[in-house]
Image (cartoon, rainbow, N blue to C red; front, side):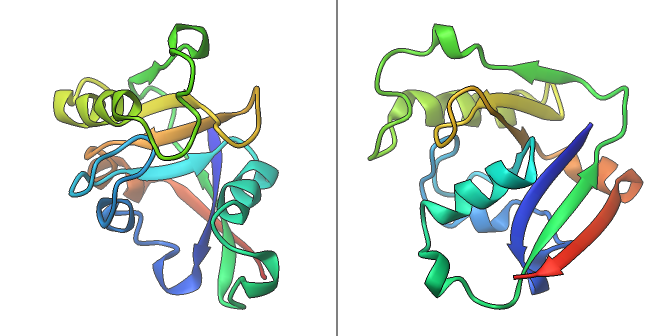
Length: 145
């Protein structure tokens, strides 16, 4: 499974979840390490674009393509089971709880979730087992933005 992430160059291959753990986010609470990725380059750009002005996007951003090995346990959140307002801001506790529970359970390495930015697209979250499988992933660094 190929996923994408727009990242500052100096953190592009870290993929340790520490950035997400610095604050409350849609799918994790502050202190919970989780790596957010997207199903396409466009979604990765859109996800960053809602937080930063494209004019203010630092020049040191790179698009990272990651090939996640087959055979990993993958769970999925069904968008139709989410209650209204799940994709609003401020972030709702129930999506954070779902993400935190995914991390705490350790039952899968990847959790596919609906994108809050692009209706119908999928984001993939990775759990603590990324420490085990990232060394098997292939990384491709695209153009600097």
